[in-house]
Length: 265
Image 1 (tube, helix red, strand yellow):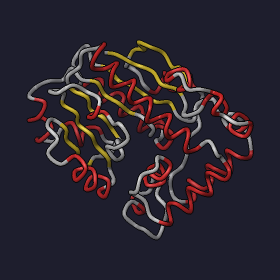
Image 2 (cartoon, helix red, strand yellow):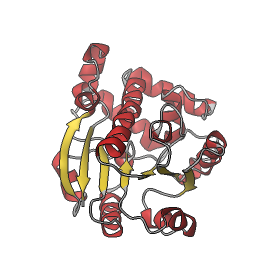
Image 3 (cartoon, helix red, strand yellow):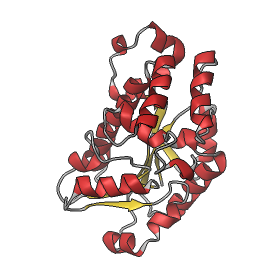
Image 4 (tube, helix red, strand yellow):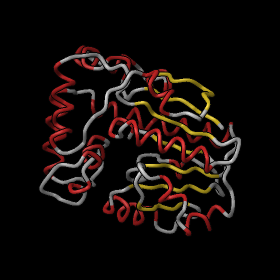
């Protein structure tokens, strides 16, 4: 994704378009126009965005209530609205958000205010070391490295090399018992003209969409070990498929926002 368009309101930005899909207000007219083009081609787009955000609610419960983590580190977080992690975890849980869009970071900090134990840093998901090696983050963690990592809604815009680097670095940094929750976007997508035209819109603004076979993600995420293997987000959240119309099913069907899985060290 081109960083040149992050705070440039003359060109659309994929992150701001995602905010528009969610009904947010952190977007410009140029983003809304581009997003509306996508919605005309793929009416499922806003539903898919909401489905991904709903899945985060399940992840919060899984990481905190069932797996007992007290630290969640989220890469490419977007704005902390619409029931993001900090609204769902118990008091005392440390939540570290990050995004490489400086405008998102500024707005996010304003939204969070003085919410205890919740922090937002400017950092690129492609360089996890830039976040994890920050003195402020190290001070917040106080030596804790058994954490729940989350990479959600971003993989389709990352190259193979970036995903592999992020997986390897986070695995080596983390303590045994840590977890990586990963959203495999663009996996096993059907071949059709509608999707190709949609991806062209993103590529024209510097956000190349990477399509992959689902099995390839297992290779990219090594040495993390599969704990709960990939399932579609419809299965993940129990999404009511009656909300999908004929065009939705033809365009993207049960794959929706891709697949989600838990990996462990």
